[in-house]
Image (cartoon, rainbow, N blue to C red):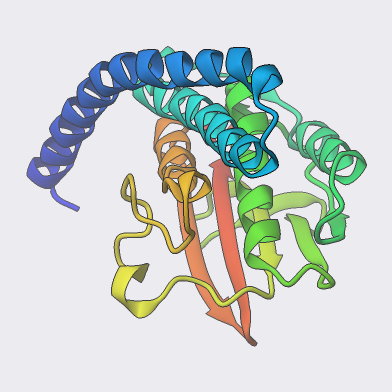
Length: 239
């Protein structure tokens, strides 16, 4: 990537972040009004069909408010506080919480990263949850989603340049992205899911986080499984 194209991408990201903040403000007001109104009138509705329909509206408004929080996080990548973070500790907490509160796909955590990365712990927790939840939603319910922390020979994974990286790999048996959207799956609002849950911000947030910490996000298919990898430079790389 040339310096000129990198600068252009930076300007595009700043413009998108500004748009996200403005859009979020207006939509949040609208969604909150719907959520509050439906919550007030639901107890007064006696018709089962009408009550069920209004309940769906209330749930959708709640999902929208949650989605908007994700947009806000994306628009504030510059506010991350980068400090040494224990990747194993953060990811283990996320997996334990998801296993406790979910009846979906079983989770399997493998591996360990003993060297810290330079990142924002709160963001890392959110991004790990995004990637794992995305995998659970894509995977058949009876198939295990594998979360792997990659480390080889006592050091964090090393690439051809000699740099060392902590890698969070999430593997599911879902179908992956269709060819029509695979090339821009990390753009906002790109999704293969239906409804509000498919608003298309999970990979956008993950890519924004990876760029901020000097890492990268990789996606590929292998043996009928979808792999998403979050690469983060180990602290001693000078990050």
